[in-house]
Length: 633
Image (cartoon, rainbow, N blue to C red; front, side, top):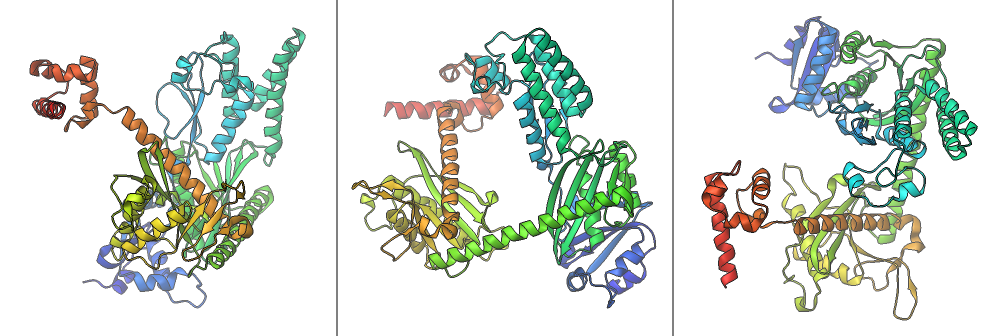
């Protein structure tokens, strides 16, 4: 068997891709190189001048190296991107998230076109603008347009159902074409103006708006002239915010880079039409060398799974240093963009000034995020002290129960990590019912307590079962919060202790209310074994996380309960028939009109419906017999 040292000696001096593998052949890292021989061997050369933090780590975990030779740097860049998606290596930088890139859709085929935000453009005759480099940029543009250009915001269904103008009309942001007579030609003018605005044809739009404002003033249509004036001012404000940096009006992206150990901050300055359009930042934690971080960012940021989902690629990308195989990356991006893309490392002039601006943004974002992080750690330490916790509560969870008149009962568990909501760990529970038999006197426990006991028992049990498992676990938090007072705290402690969890930190948070004596009771935290609760306002800085998490749990549980109620109200008897899919049920209802007619129909009539098979008929007959038996009893 060829050893790792022998493979390093036999590496070719050609472009290609290399894969670092660990135990059982698991791919740990994928990289590209202009010369496989020099690039791969550089990882294993013990040089006193090489301070890359990744080198000692690689020497410990890498067992094998696989190389793939390509015909060019461009092919190496494409293959690297493909292999990263295929293997999902643990130590590669993963930057791309298709959900981040939004487009604005303008429905031109409707009598009253509207704008909406979409994630995946389709070939449906509508105009799409974007994708935008960030969700906030897309929504900011949409907000500006909705404020100054009066297009409807309601859906087509709402437009048909509405019988009177909505609030948008009252605040003069919609002409209410749903119920009021609207000049179709004027509305089309608004649509054309929106198209020019989103296309970036601001000078052309400005000239048209100036002319329309003058015409409206001449005919004494002063309210209309004022609307055109406001649109002009909004357009001028956009121009003021976009500082001119280049006269050539070429689209450019400028990457700023700042690093402190393994913490990396990237800033991307977007220059569109010679103006600075926006700045976005991204934080990373990696031991990879700078050149590889930059290369990974450029490759993954602009590479889409398909042409429609990819972010627009500018004609020039300014970088702080030259990445590995930069020529191949540029050639590949040129093919993706349909125009020539140049990767430049500025040395002087206005481009260098712009690069320094991007670097300053990266440095500022890094220090600002660190300051916020330090403040969060300080507040978590204060929370630990106030609640007398054994460890800082890095992970906190909160439970809330929601029901409507005792029905549609659901529970929610929401999570917080390092002071920020962690929505990936949100969980919902449909309460099955039943008494909490392990409580002291279940007969005296109301449904809220029983429901909370059930939800908490199920959540705690999952944490116990998955401890020590190699699978993705739902580990227990550092602190668990329940919504309520001393009674809810007792239920939570009973649920934990019944499962042997005596060390889990649990508290309850009671809402602000007025007692029978008319005294105003502020929000307070109840601790196990402590008679008097802690007022939240007395330790506002330390306890501020808890009300926020409790309110989020309340919102999430209500959302789950509403969905459960909607599903129950819309439920049909056909939903209980095993083996009937959504399309088959739809065809049956469309053919017969109602459920009763379906159960009363003959076998031949049922078989005449598209998609209905013998097994479906048997299932319908079996379910009908069950209903009859229940009714007879």
